[in-house]
Image (cartoon, protein in one colour):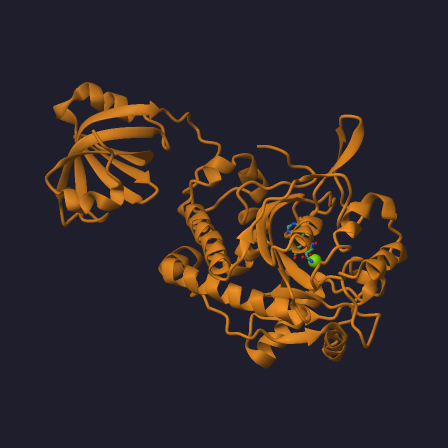
Length: 439
Ligand code: 4AD
Ligand code: MG
């Protein structure tokens, strides 16, 4: 018999159906057993009148919570039943996979164990409907990203993650043995998306894995994450890149609100706001002054970079002043930007770059790139890079490469910000960190 989803039962009143799912609760009474079954579309009550089949009743009474079962029964319209005002009268039951008891933890308990413990048993943690909702929303997010880009003449690329040279810096690099030489796991598709500009693709995006050997334990860093990257040609400045990003994000948020607005209220407890465009833009030099005037001093060792506290403080300022959750911080000092960022014409100590801060968290870094090979090589040397390993990259700019720029965004950071989560481990399917490689 074909399986019916719980959400479709209302259209099958008085018919015999098969449903498959997890036994969320069993209420074993004297004469009757109530089984609450769950699939990805909802919950339903299944009733078994014990005297009908004593041996089946015995089998059911030994079933552990979260067992995977299929049941066949008749759908009955019953206004007194709280769940969907219907129930299934059990005819037969197959235990597809019995759950051992006790469970590592009860995903439906009021108080949950620590996040770290839940990571050990992530597949149990993911059984919580809030988590299923999160990945339904993430699916829509990625679909909306692609929709927006493909409608605007972008094409998708998939660049290799095994590379011969670092793109961002020598630090945070995973290396591995690669036959007779060393290889590195890509820290970003940076060089390869720029190669697409040299190839004449004009507008590209990539959604793929990114690796960072970052030893820190924070609520927003992972050693492997999904990077969302784009690159466009024929731009005049980094502002052209910001314009694409803000419109793209507005489209993503409005699609998510359309499809999941109610679900977000139910599971995450707030109403999603679609951001207005343009997003506020503040040059870094000004941001530092604003922070000072609010009594926030950036740590001196940061050399003009902003720290997480500064990000939150500037976000608070933007919220007060512009009532906006997003802000582009622009024109970062050369000292804290990679060699490939183009510099401002009127102030070569600053770069044509930006970070996007959302609800106080960096979700994007972007820039116009230096596409003039002599200047690019000079900037690389200045940053202490050897030209040998990046010669192939410098060559991209020798045979007609247009001015271009782009950005990288962390998918789980976006989910974190969109759904108001306090830790990236809650926003990613499986977390990878310095001490976590399993499951
Ligand atoms: O800021 P990042 O390092 O910038 C780049 O990789 C550049 N190649 C982008 C460009 O086109 N100029 O990384 C981009 C984004 C960050 O803003 C952040 O959202 C996310 O990737 N990210 C991380 N997410 C989780 N864990 C980490 N360790 C992350 N590092 C960066
Ligand atoms: Mg960054």
